[in-house]
Length: 194
Image 1 (cartoon, one colour):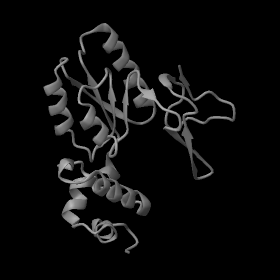
Image 2 (cartoon, rainbow, N blue to C red):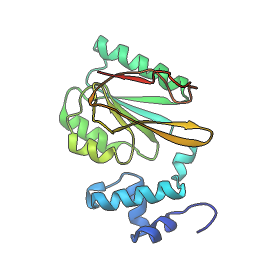
Image 3 (cartoon, helix red, strand yellow):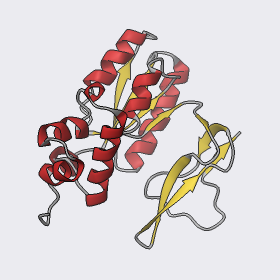
């Protein structure tokens, strides 16, 4: 393997073509591949530290899907998301679904996943199967998300080591009290689950 990971490295390790690797890493036509194939390509890319060219220079966008940007509740929520994203070095792109499942589906299909670092739903997603599939490629959070015991909640970096923080119980995420890049101490509350 070369010093800089390539699509060919991933293709050789997973037994697929470089074109298939590219499609999977860019979130294009994922329905053409088995979930096991997608998972193996993503795992290998992560294992060798591969990042798409555009992700090296961008990938700082968070897509926010809202059912109604004119509703004061959602407007306030989006303002809070924007402030937190900006503080962490990200920018947001707001997409209005107009409470329409077809619009939501179209928006999810048209996002450039090489530039999107995550997706936040300001409502419960209607495209659950599509969202579940996309969550293998990009972090997704929805207001009122339910988590299960043992589910990965976040990753903390300490002394260049990544530490997984998993849920110790089932519940609904009510508040995340830290942002990317924050320093935390032992005993700090990171998030609340009810």
